[in-house]
Image 1 (spheres, one colour):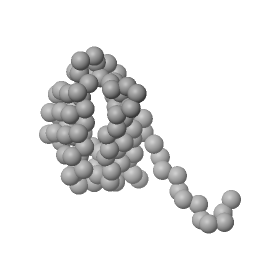
Image 2 (tube, rainbow, N blue to C red):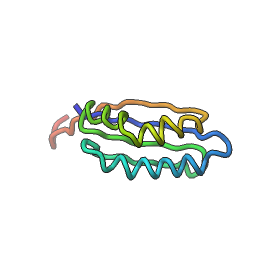
Image 3 (cartoon, one colour):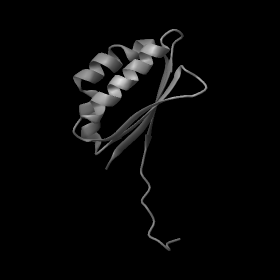
Image 4 (tube, rainbow, N blue to C red):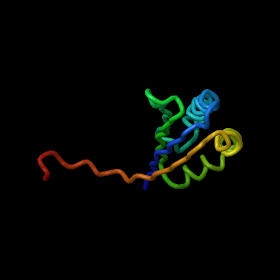
Length: 103
């Protein structure tokens, strides 16, 4: 079963640009991971401190490998977490696509 999640980060005042840089770094490095289907960072257009990460992995093992990676330890656990006012994670389950004409 795929592992899909969204993560919302709110940077502490004065940390917004470093958090944005970490999101860019993590996007590049995570996309290179085996098992990563999609990873995209976003920034709210009306709030420079608010970020949304969309993450999609082939399965739980691929997600675990991501969390256990050196770049996660360095940039997320080792740096970003200390620069955030808030960090929220939500998991999602994909909906199957209905056959044409199905109700």
